[in-house]
Image 1 (cartoon, rainbow, N blue to C red):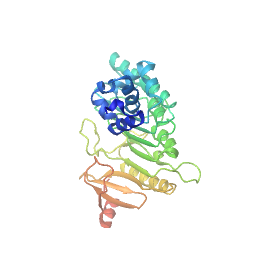
Image 2: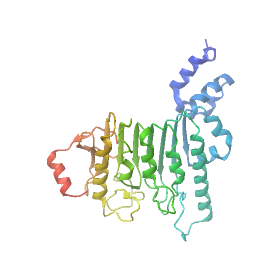
Image 3: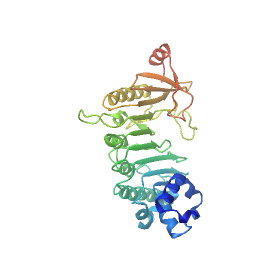
Image 4: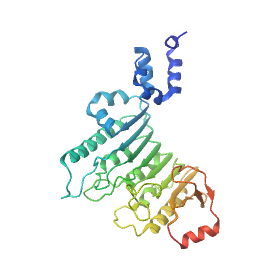
Length: 321
């Protein structure tokens, strides 16, 4: 018996086991036959992976978005390149083609968010950026629209190198946008160039929320100078151009994480990652247990880590960030 002779239900389970990657490696694997394609597309469209270029292609017309809408469960959006995906301060000098490109990306993100709002099955969203110029300010509203997609249970945001500051004329406050999604989330991972304690503010009311796994990373220690252009390699505080209050930001985030952990039904982990200076040793504070651990690197945010002795913790409090 060949694969095509198997019942559709069994063939679909085989495709689901192979997953998105199997078909993404060679799109011709989607086109063996009509029956094959009908089942394979449902698996392929469950996990959508978009880059800067494929985002524009996917949103240029209605066909692609309409085809994935009934099946999408997870979206991974990776924006990269040397193009200026930002709008400069008024009066700033930017090539016309770069500004046009920035407007196209913003329009594409807005279209994508509108489609995802209509997708009842979408559950996870991951947004990452790398290799982008830091010279301007991103209009944050398109990203805020993505973060507000209904039914999300998992949200990952790692946009270091993308200057996501905000103000009255620069779009949404992303910490507030992410915070608004907390009541429906089960899992959150977040690192942005600018953050504040509003990100982890407990939602109104007394009812426990299902969120049980949270990691917020304040450290840019592992990033190259071209991305982490800060003396201490820390994220900045929202609406602040100074990085002199790094210790205050760390303390505020840890305090808010502790307050949030008390509102969670069955919290497994509420972690705030930071680093020592000048050693750049990575530390993690778990608000659920109140304990601190030393992480081997700043790549594996989920690592268990090595317990930090109480004496070291006291020195940290009296020393540097």
